[in-house]
Length: 130
Image 1 (cartoon, one colour):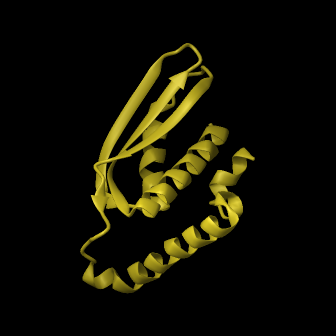
Image 2 (cartoon, rainbow, N blue to C red):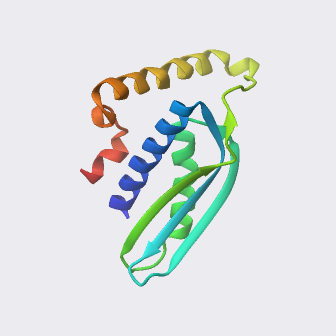
């Protein structure tokens, strides 16, 4: 499952990047797994609206861990982000400093990816599939 977790990380990173590019946040996530014997499992979860790679990956990782239980090859691993909302959000009064730093981080990462290509930066857990 380590390889599949790395693939999941890359898929989530790319989906979050596209989400931010369009100016949205996701309030729901769906994981779809299809095995080699064509059995398909789909699991969804409602989350607090976010466009952060880490938040989305944490939730989808939990879904993946609870779903992946068969000893059959996986032939499809898909992620869907839904319940889309605009960027406006209310900040937590006590977490404002950390939130301000994070708000600057993702636009900087997105600018680098736009200029040099998506693969210029990646999470370490997503690099395992290379």
